[in-house]
Image 1 (tube, one colour):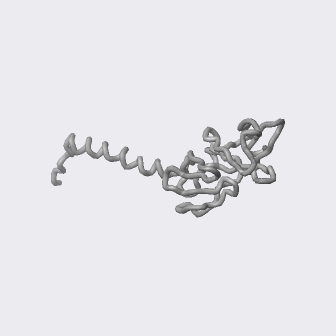
Image 2 (cartoon, rainbow, N blue to C red; image 1 turned 30 degrees about the vertical axis):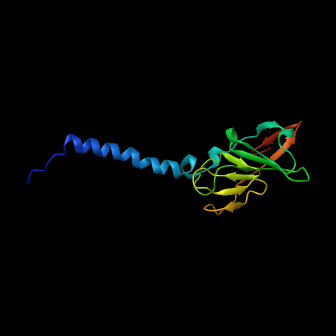
Image 3 (cartoon, rainbow, N blue to C red; image 1 turned 60 degrees about the vertical axis):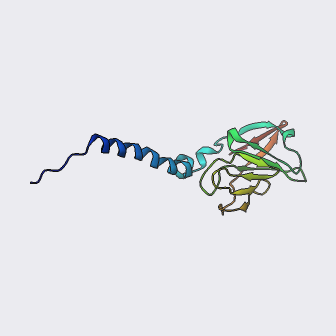
Amino acid sequence: MPARPSASRRTVLRGAAVVPAAGLGLAACSAPGNGSSAAATPTAPVDLGAESEVAKGGAKLYRDHNVVVSRDGNGALKAYSTICTHAGCAINKLQGTTLICPCHGSEFDAVTGKVVQAPATEPLTELPVKASKGRIVAGPDA
């Protein structure tokens, strides 16, 4: 049986350094919770704040809960998850009523949840929302 050369310490260390760095790209582009955005959005009703915080025709981003709430011209509230449907990134920017994903630049209409700029192709997930005692409550059973 021929002798197999053993790996040098340098070779082993070099390989160990590459493995964690390679995983960074996957972590940045994968959805939270192993491909599911459910863990990143409210799983129970969440009090987001005063109803007066969302003006007619406007929207407000609630980063801590991954939710955006908008109010149409008639005063009706709508809420959407702000987990991007392209790669599962948390959207952290709202310009007017346009949500902008920091990962790949997808843009969504905060009033309808629809995609207004690719690479995303699917609309945001709509969430139940209501006004209760002057407060905005979003999430399941809201």
